[in-house]
Image (tube, rainbow, N blue to C red; front, side, top):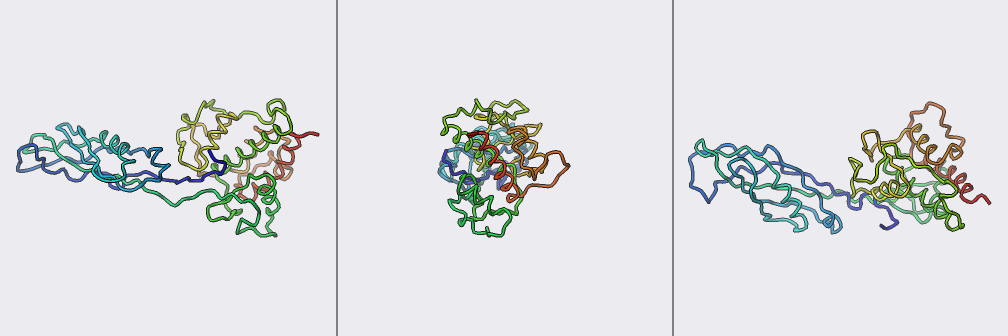
Length: 312
């Protein structure tokens, strides 16, 4: 994947805007009856957003015409409108739907129905990669984290902002963003070691952090391949054997990381010597890291870690 990390390459969410079939129509294939009752949906599975549709940025409504049998099962489905790239996913979901059987004069019968899915696109939220500190519109020289972001963006090339081209040093660091910073840090250190003719494994640059012993991202319950940090989560696990998941194997990308938790993870991976002196592990601190505070933390830690990679 490209080095530019996407916080939501498209951040496309799939949901059912109309989650029930329309009132089943009188079937043209059977004799009419005086009263039709039932036909209400009792289970409408969610369609999966197809990978090819993500790449093509396909979205919008898809209408699926269905035939419901006497048991309330969907026995046939036909896409009648929408983007063709979304048809297969919508059809697969529609065929799994379940209905209360329609009754014709107290007898179950087949009936037609319509399901409308809406594949909705939200605002594009790509991470913003700055080539120079001035590219971050909200940074000022008197910001306490200015020098740290300057080094991380211009020297280390691992700083990133949000889609509005601001760094947002005041915002709380999310787990997704932490995963992105961590992956960039490990890649940076590995590249520096390689350029110096040193095998990163020989100097024990880092230690694995995989308490659940996950093998791949398929084992992360809430992993979403369309999310911006997905590539970093995958690289952390498959290249570095690091899985930032909880005991339930959830990543919880939008949640925040407490001061103590982040420092504990950092120490486990890089060793206690990599902790900046202003961020001691042994004090009880449940505060949350802001992006600016983490920039200071990471910048100071990189000074130690770079020396570890290039001792001479």
